[in-house]
Image (cartoon, rainbow, N blue to C red; front, side):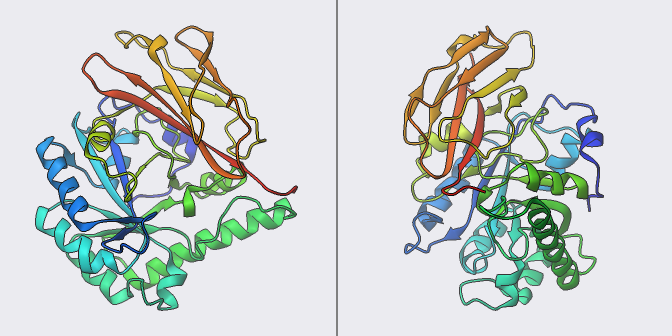
Length: 346
């Protein structure tokens, strides 16, 4: 069980050099009608075999967070597994396969859907059964509503809405799971991976740690308000691409401006990298924008500060820039930043 910690305390924790971990994010299993969130069962089995073949150690989310807090160390080749929403196929398809391998996994539960007994969601009894067998449970909020401030929404109303949703979801998990060690309190995953500065301020005020859905490995400098994860679905299941992600390291990003993902259609992103000796040639850094492919990287200070500007306006909704840097050992350092473009004015 993780106690609430202020962000300042978390950031002040000793950095753990080995805490570069790829975190995978799943939703549905063997539900071919939902390709955007589903992974086919043969692909899922192959992915578990690939993790074993690469001799990666599957670490619990609690262990990963403890490493980021300076409380433990992690192996150089590690991965963590997460599942969002709490669909029923976790119980029928994913958990039997994971249990057979002994691999740890955390399910981020959207509690309203379970309470309302939606037919394709888990029940509380199923969650308790899996929790007793080793499954870890954390919060995905109550409503699974998009949390960033909506056009026309007053700022005070927005922050109150977010806080109520987060606290209500965590309260329901405590009520249903009690003092079970399977409940990972104060750890949260943003619905749809969406957040803004206001949402992150609520997470920080609660002393929580939050995960998004933007790609990249988690490392010592990762922002604990929005830790990255690699989505896995029918589109993102290629074994070679997954191998690159599983072996990735965190690009050592020290600061970004602007941090808030809410953006104009033509954003300018400045990124500062930490100084380090023995790094690969940073001039080989490449960045890619959703729907636009490779985009120019402008170095403001060679090796330290670079700028990325999408050459074309971003479409409304979610977009990302992924920046990768190959290392001499063939492993890539990876960083992703999310942009949210609203269709209407606030």
